[in-house]
Length: 211
Image 1 (tube, rainbow, N blue to C red):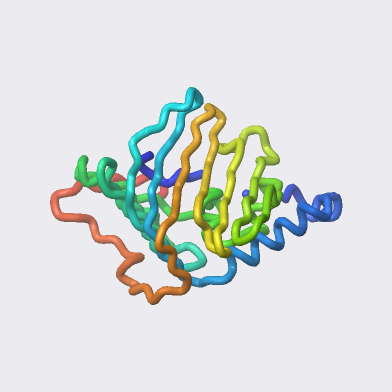
Image 2: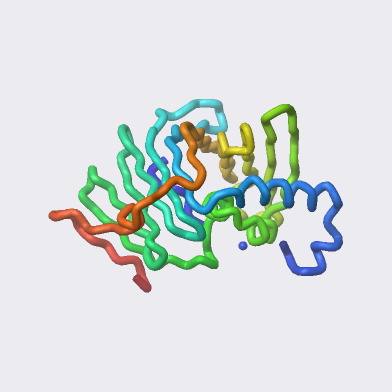
């Protein structure tokens, strides 16, 4: 719940072995996710355990600028700020007055980051992409991992009016994390200060190895 899950088409020949409908799904998803360079949204995030129990929801805001800049701000009951400035990933927990700084590695981007950045070619290396349903203004995509060791066993993306409305991530333990987006804006004007981070006075700074 408290942070974006941080976590790579098996080769050129597999492109030709993939079924036509899979390629069409890849193309359609890419079209939907490449219509913007900047993006902002409010969100609600919650998890459901394998026995159906729902956790308390967290609300917040997301702003991003492609390819890799973003600020994810969670509010109560799990306040947290995550900023990627293109060089470092900063994770700030106000309750603990603690900041963790990790070196940013574009090659190790997580599936949610690849999705929001519209990097479908790279996403297709790790997942098969299918268009489950398309009706009226809604389109539902499903991503299934090619590798059994993947962090996620299933990802679902719901688009409404060609804007991402919901992202669902299911892990190997059966827990499902759902992020519902509201008041989305494509190509808003975003100040550079949104993608920088200053350690608050009094906060402890923890440097991950290599940071």
